[in-house]
Amino acid sequence: MTTAELTLPAGPVDLRTIPTDATPGFEGDKEQGEKALAKLGPGLADLQERLFAARGTDQARSVLLVLQGMDTSGKGGVLRHTVGLIDPQGVRITSFKAPTKEELGHDFLWRIEKALPARGYVGVFDRSHYEDVLIARVRQLAPPEEIERRYDAINAFEADLVAQGTVLIKCMLHISAETQKERLLARLDDPTKHWKYNPGDLDERALWPAYREAYQIALERTNTEVAPWHVIASDRKWFRNLAIGRLLHEALAELGLGWPAADFDVEVEKQRLADEAPIT
Amino acid sequence: MTTAELTLPAGPVDLRTIPTDATPGFEGDKEQGEKALAKLGPGLADLQERLFAARGTDQARSVLLVLQGMDTSGKGGVLRHTVGLIDPQGVRITSFKAPTKEELGHDFLWRIEKALPARGYVGVFDRSHYEDVLIARVRQLAPPEEIERRYDAINAFEADLVAQGTVLIKCMLHISAETQKERLLARLDDPTKHWKYNPGDLDERALWPAYREAYQIALERTNTEVAPWHVIASDRKWFRNLAIGRLLHEALAELGLGWPAADFDVEVEKQRLADEAPIT
Image (cartoon, rainbow over the protein chains, first blue to last red):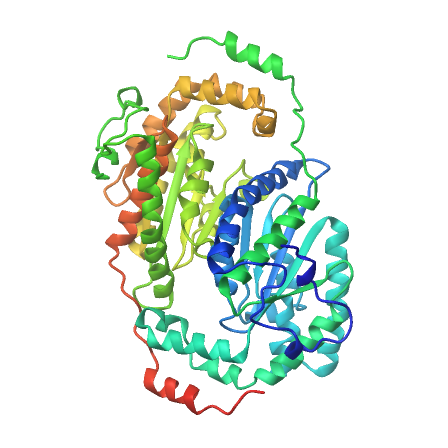
């Protein structure tokens, strides 16, 4: 599987022309896809440990995975199945909800900056600063000129992040309206899933075309060379999980991180242990 | 396997009389132990989801797992292998290092309170407020009367936590000095593990008897009915991981959490979906 096919080409974006049920770059079925994801696990764990080990060195880097998508597109599933493959000590997940009063008293990027992963960590944003040009645009939560300002602000912010040494992986989980309908019905049909359902979900769903347009504008305007977008066909959960696993693996592997050299004399330390007084 | 045998009896504590290489309550070898832990996974995931689902209801609870132990006792291994079985969205891990200047400007519990898991979450403390009566005692980082005050402060704090609805699971990972020596040597022998080693580790190791005494006093004085200690034989990594998995599973199961009932009319919502205008 190559990940090149997941990268959004530059230029205008028409989400209706991008399939939601394809498996670009992967020749295999669900069972093979799930096996391929499981096989990524040990490699991901090794790469994440190298990232963590390098945090105090001049090779220190961090990774930020941004997950955006309509309700039921599977952000939680990616966290469980893909991010769950990594040692939880090295992961920092932030789920962005409607901003608090305090957050609204600041620029929209204020709460985002506070949640950035420290060097050595893999940060994951479940929703992100993109909400501020998505729901904010659809629901007119800010004046048009402020929304307009934000696209450039996001690009400048992300360029700076990358320049600081953060590897940024932006993924839009792309589902069809039909798939969302099936998933909402499945939640309604299963009493153990009622807690995940909110009647407001249908109010948002009714605005599907407006959200699609807001996504298209955001994707087009923030699809920069240093921080490109990936549009992940997400009608098939297994493909969505695998595709993001591969992106994460590829990004970590590209860092080419070795293991930090000892900053002490290994033989001296062995001798100290050999010579120690008995512990009773 | 029962977990009763993991609970520390009330009264004076002599760690030298508690085996570090036993497998209390489990009849099986490493392979069977690892299988038993893997088998806990789906149940743990289900229970954690119930905890999360209940967070907005009057059944809302939280769980706090406190991990203490000497260097190389395996706190990181428990995070990776046991806590790693749970959906990372529902977990909040805090690794407590030496306090910052800002933290030192406050009471020792200030940074602990800030890191408490919100309702619905499983919090894990990798080291904790117990450092303030362990290294603080051994290294005389605070006056004796302040150390003395802290045992009661911890008991009052933990009793309040439990009264608020937090399930507190306190585990001391118990290894022998010989096991620590083997693990430190293994780190020195493997260049991919040099980053985990610090010459200061041997300085702390030389104080093993003082740490043992500090642990014994802390365990005895904070082994309360509402917040008992578990001493986990940790020379065998697989047993340590399994034992803590069982404690976590048992604590979650005891909450007896069901699924929150819908606070909307399910049939009305189904009808709304059935009646919606086509999305194009």
